[in-house]
Image 1 (tube, rainbow, N blue to C red):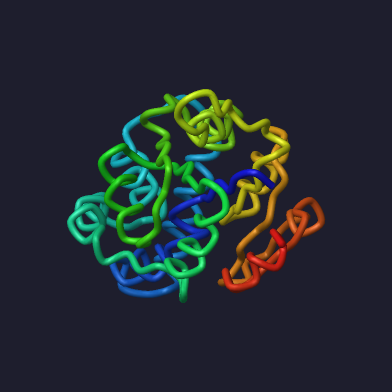
Image 2: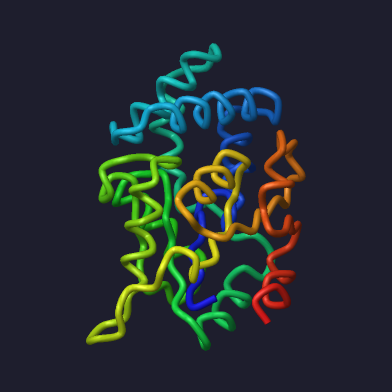
Length: 210
């Protein structure tokens, strides 16, 4: 593979723990997050990220103001173990980037927390749509192109590291080869059979690319 594109908020960062903490428990946190994922993956064209998060909270009986708290505490997001070290090693041999379902400001802030030399960070706001719309994956691939005359890698030359089952299916439909990083071992609904590999630790990724 000539390049690696990553989901950010699930594949590289443990955003689940922050949502749970803000919701004051794993059960309400997961209900809120799953409702957010359902809405985000159905909406298509970009709408403000804050609105999606607030609407999702309200839909499951939580205060809409949790969206404000999430933004206020955004920099508490933590990378999965060794994420920065693994990605820095990968970046020695190939460009790496991010395609993420959030606003431009929050996407850039979250990417900085990983501690990796991303060539590009493509957000839903910048692409004008949310995953699984193929356009955001394509924008992520195009953004990995080197300067000069290096050319843009083809989709089938880019490995996508997904963070959720819907992301696995979306990236596959966009023509990318997909590895699903599933550290929380969430049910896959068939995504595990679609992905080239399912890993539970990012340290498994270099062997797949070797």
